Length: 403
Image (cartoon, rainbow, N blue to C red; front, top):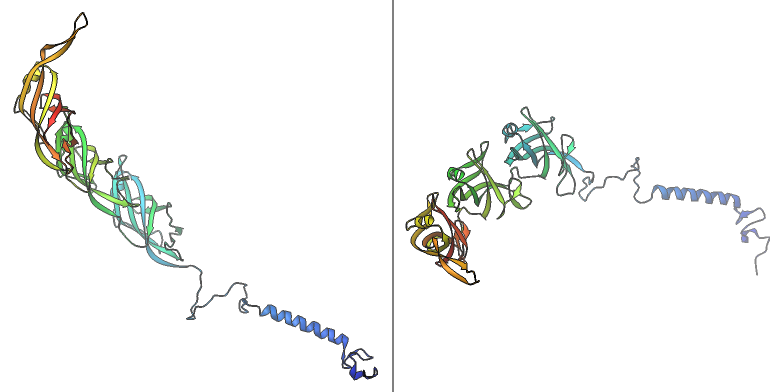
């Protein structure tokens, strides 16, 4: 049986509105509100990731397992870095003033020193590439090629960097930047050049001739071979030279151009200036083995004066080298083709001109594949050869050659 309704101990609310006869319902609501407010505040203050000591709203520095500060903010320090600059074409008096070891200090903490240089002719002046050591402010970060500044400005590829000394002021484009290597990748390379020049120039070219820029040898002639061309006023010259080259972007360059077979290499001395075609790289010698071969040359319709001048013993020489020696001569009247009034075709002897056959010895070079070169060029039967016997020049066809 249910408890008596007048029993206040068994009722939730008594006649006075007290909970279980003890707590006033209004007071209970106030207590619940206070508990909710206090709980919400504690949750806000103690939420994960907040640091009560961080009064600026910034994330705190983390520490690693050793308790050291793991601040990811980039730091700065002073170190030596290297850059390659293209100073462009400079007039001779400026180029001569620029020297390895030159220094410049734009402020108390930053210095620049030219450690190495590479020079070449360009448009009547001298173009310079220089390697500089920079005492710079390095910004350390996670990049392999850490950025750095010099005199308050970042040093980046393609930027301009000035050099100011008591003797000159120049500006160069930054081509590369590194943390090591204080010298440029300059080396001495061997080339074989071929060119055709006037006789007067050919006579001036000698082994030992050097193309100088200041005190620096740029190109040196190591050996020279001169050939006749079949024209009395020109000679073919084959030169073995050594040249100062530079490695850039994975290629070997002379001046501002790649050096490869077929490209041109310039040589300037006080006596002459020539452009030689590169025919071989990495060697000073012509391809093949020099030898003498017997050959037959023929010409038709030669004038009597020329035919009579072609005699055994004639030689073609250039630069002290005998390239052709006549060992035998055969002549016969030249034939002419005539047409009669009635349309018949017939051959008759020319009253004056001669057909000439020469037996000669040729100085050639034989390559490993059996190819023969004469005067530095490949030669084959059926080709026309211009012979220069000094005061006498004549064009003849190579009809046969010893193999």
